[in-house]
Amino acid sequence: MAFTLASHILLVPFGVALPAITLLMHYRGLRKGDAVALLLARRWSAVMAVQFAIGIVTGTVLSFEFGLLWPGMMGRWGDVFGLGFGIEAWAFFLEAILIAIYLYGWRRLKPWTHFWLGLPLPLAALMGAFGIVAANAWMNTPRGFTLDASGKPVNVHVRQAVFTPMFGPEYWHFVVGVVLTAGYVVAGVYAVGLLRGRRDRYHRLGFTLPFTVAAILTPVQFVLGDSIARSVFHKQPVKFAATELVWKTDTHVPEYLFGRLHTDGSVSGGIKIPQLDSILAGFRPSTEVTGLTSVPASDRPTVIQATIAHWAFDIMVTVGSLLVLLALWYGWCRLRRRELPRSPWFLRCAALAGAACLLTVECGWITTEVGRQPWIVYQNMRVSEAVTGTRAASLWTMFGIVVVVYVLAFGSFLTVLVKMSHRWRLADEGAPAGAATGDLEGATPYGPRPLSTTASGDGGDE
Image (cartoon, rainbow, N blue to C red; front, side):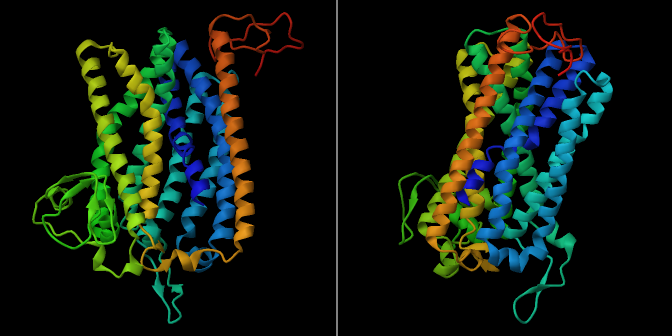
């Protein structure tokens, strides 16, 4: 499950945020009559469709795993938090239909009609994120039910089960995070092109729009990250203690940057900042922070799990702080000179920002799930009660099959992206229509395609 989630989550930022970034570029192209912007929007829509197809494969495997690997949880709690998965399923099918319409609309619909038909795409993606985050937030702060004499949930209140205390902080932190991640990744592709000397308007615009979106959202995400950490402090104090390596409940608690927790409560390595943890949690040194020893050892993460959650959290904070500096650098140059920063180091940092964001997405998931151990449903069901009793040999066979499927899926995804990139580059360099690269694009996504002298049939539509 860790492998499949860690793999699938890499596609999530593009599934949720790439439609919005694409439509933003599309709007710019129509508003300003900008053929370059329209060309970028069309190409991004092709990437969006390929990513969605790969997401179908990885997401389907995950849906099977919920039933196969976690029968205890699904059998007992499915009626309570299953609504989130139902919402995600409806959003998935709606998004598939909308992507098909959007792709079909190039050169077949009037420009503005095509744009307005694509506008619901980001809303469908956000609705899918709503369902998944609602389910995860419920696992962290379960609400909306009562337990009968046998311990089974009854009297389910859907509204309370969906809008749990952690839902708001998780949802907005997630949405802003995936949008800025997609923005930095897309911009990073064009940053590499700019570093290689391709300083035409196509690469500048392909870099500027998504990077601007990401740069604006970066400080917002930093504030939201601080907010969700404080929500964990109030709603899941033991989880907060794990992520901050707090052993005993106390005031004036120091903050450790990285470091390793030991079974006696000591922390080795890292950087110790006196009183900072209490200040960050409650804005004053006298704030009391709950420690791991406030609950029995069986009800809290192990020292290894706490260290993993702590490192994941600190990596997120470190990368987020560096991205804020990068965004300020970009904003200063844009406001002062109305142009991109001239230093090649800026482009190098921008090219790495996308990979750094994907790392933080992984770290965010690790913090959320590992910090909650040993509970799969916080304080209501342990992982040991939820997991399947299938023999280890069967699990290893299943795991091997899943690894092969995912390697093939991601390999196909990267192969298609490389081939599309090569084809587009040849088109930009003016390769003749009908060359070995196939039917190339016309001057604008809404203009007629030039006829090929070697192509059979009309070849006019795509």
